[in-house]
Length: 425
Picture 1 (cartoon, rainbow, N blue to C red):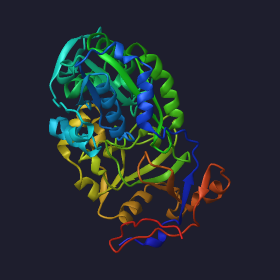
Picture 2 (picture 1 turned 90 degrees about the horizontal axis):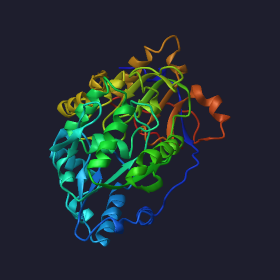
Picture 3 (picture 1 turned 90 degrees about the vertical axis):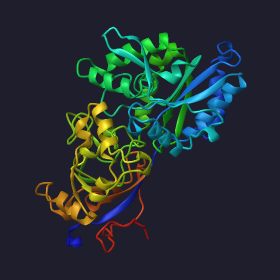
Picture 4 (picture 1 turned 180 degrees about the vertical axis):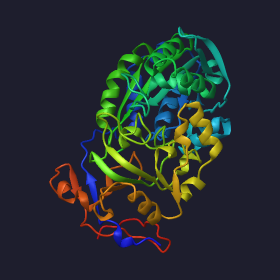
């Protein structure tokens, strides 16, 4: 049994974010689509394939439903295609299950969902890369691309995750995701993204896109409808907005970071590398990257990730329950496809929180456990409130961007030495 008195006192904080939020998402989708004069491009009864990805985008069911309704009013016949590369174990059933967990079902959307892992090869890029495209989407008269704009977890550049990436990885399905990630070993992500996306735009009847930017509270900050010839230019600008809007940890250094849950609905790497400071090395910050976090402990997986534990290998420690929740085949499929095989590696894991924390604190250097800088978050999307150790107390009392919610007090554990939820008195 671990001596629980060796752990530092903890206190809860709330970060004060200046956020812009779209409150009536459905109405804003309609207003944005009105700007594009799509009625001039769509003939009666033409089919439109709408992409639906695997990220946990705020109100994605409302957004997609609004797009479906708009296209129906124009006389089109919309349907939804899962556009999520190898996620869901690279299977139709797995991808439909992901969509269902977001409330995206045929009944809720009022249109068919046509799911297939089959692709067609529309051409080769100038680099000689086969350009894969979802077979179901290829049979539609038009394709409408919907995705969130956000910094990528592995790559830098003026364009990262968004509409352009959806044209490759999402609509390329497992076949495309696999070949594009392999190509990154020989060409830059930026080159592949621009090269392949332009081929798709020119050859695959891309009608328009809806770019989503979220704020620090993980709600909708901006929706913008974009025509295909403007995807690249607008993504550059919207990426800057998305980067500035991201929630971040309120410190540059921690000895230990506790994360309640990781999952594909949170980030492509389970935990957002832009948040934990491990974009270029799984186990440390590089260069000017911040924060520097010595040890990460993962406590579990999200229900929505359905066993895909991609990113677990970026932590040094975990609870054994997180490992038990792991679907090894789904995780391996995703990590091999993305060429991020270390993200699937299993960290040291223990049956209870106290043991995992004690072992982690043995590895932080000369700092005594009671003096360690420790933070505890739910996940890397939801970081408005968090727990921090007493080592941050003096600094955080001077911060105008933070609200301290309670005095320092001990960690609380149950009879099995697992953490219980903090409640400020």
